[in-house]
Length: 109
Length: 113
Image (tube, rainbow over all chains, first blue to last red; front, top):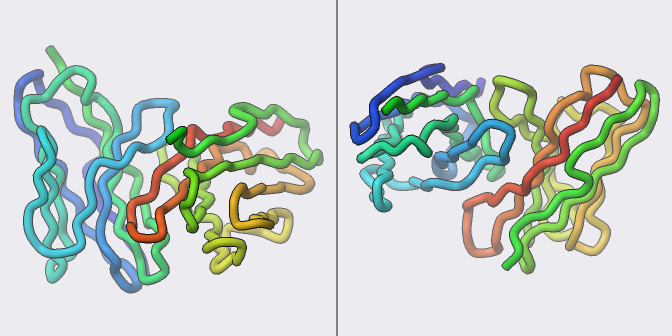
């Protein structure tokens, strides 16, 4: 079967660092994506990992362990505008994305 | 680069009516995906095109749903005899020939009354 597990909600303060974890099981694997989605808007692409290890892109980093079926998204120097849902989405062997329910992050001043 | 566009942005229809949505992908993106998202959930895959060929359809896509991409450019998603359970955001995404990332359009929000 296919299953994505991430925390439902997280809170953090402005300027802090937050790590959003994701575990997954899919039929085949062709990389893992992280998307940001503000309420009422479409998801926007943040990162893509296909090999084990850490990918860094500005304030955002994403890590993948294929053998453990595990990924995390690390957000540094949090800003109020980072309040959004963060969607972990592995890609299966047909390239479609399998989304979980996402993690709703609230950043407080 | 204008991004993925979708029309209409909002659609309100009465139960039993047919609706059609359009998606224009990013220029030269050969892969196009349709997803559906309900409140509090992540997007769910509906169907996928590579050029004009429809390569996969989800079991979620009942026979009331049909999608086309006639010339390998824009795509349409039609829902016949709409039901209240069809109320959702319908998202389109496109992906380039030489990459894996999917870029989403703004979505069409469907409300069936």
